[in-house]
Image 1: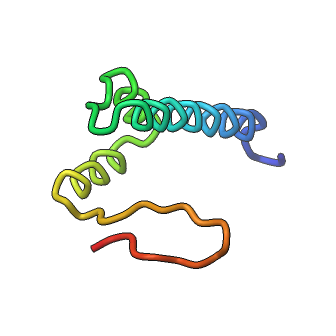
Image 2: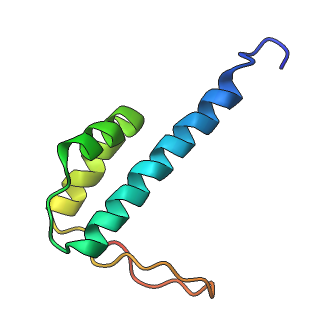
Image 3: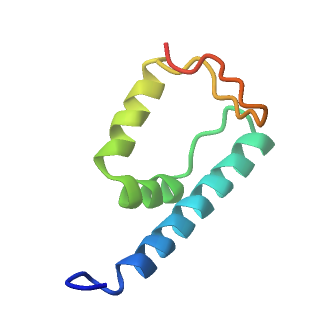
Length: 82
């Protein structure tokens, strides 16, 4: 990488893996106990990774701005944000 940080790609991979791990843990928590509060350690990790973007996204969720979150593999898109 000319003129760039040679470790940037490695850091990006580590951050992506950390984010994936947080989301996997959160998904498992939600599946096992629907309606459970998100533990502080997961919130802290997500905030470290996503900063102000996480805070804004949580504000949208808290305000009821999310109507559905559906992952589809057939390419059809459904409702998402109100």
